[in-house]
Length: 183
Image 1 (tube, rainbow, N blue to C red):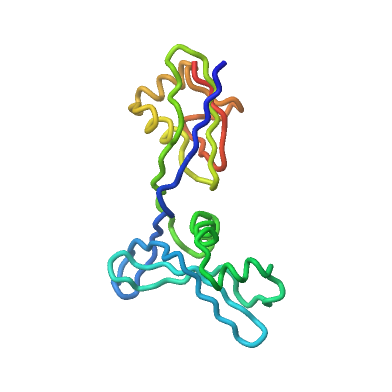
Image 2: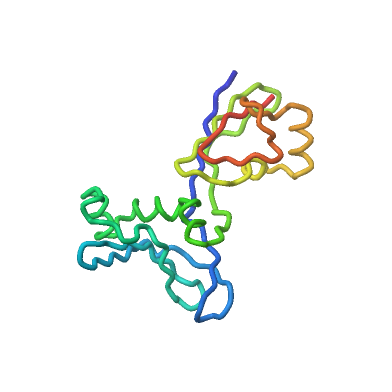
């Protein structure tokens, strides 16, 4: 059995939908990659700044609210102060964090890197993702193999594409990763 690894590479942080006060309607907001840190006496507030795609109005997604600076790791705190790119990306890719801040997260654009299984040859494809993507596995496989919805469902029904863990490939979402068997 041939083993193949597909790596999911996000092309950027996902856009979020929020009501924009300046536009007066729901708009797409993109991550600025910057944090706002506000220290008042003994407590600290940290936000990740998002900007409206139409008017540049900002929306602050709360990372920490009313927390003692001593409660945070010194490196983490320095990352907030210096607007560390990797840290901002980590929060921007955290769908639970965004939903907890009242945002509707749009499907992120991503590319699937790796070889395509040879037709008729049994292959084990491990899908790996650095970030938990709530993207349907069917969408990733169809995009990678250039399959129509009908062709994909046919191959799943016939058992030519299946999950090693027995998940329903018509409905399941990727999260951190999974293993598929192609026949």
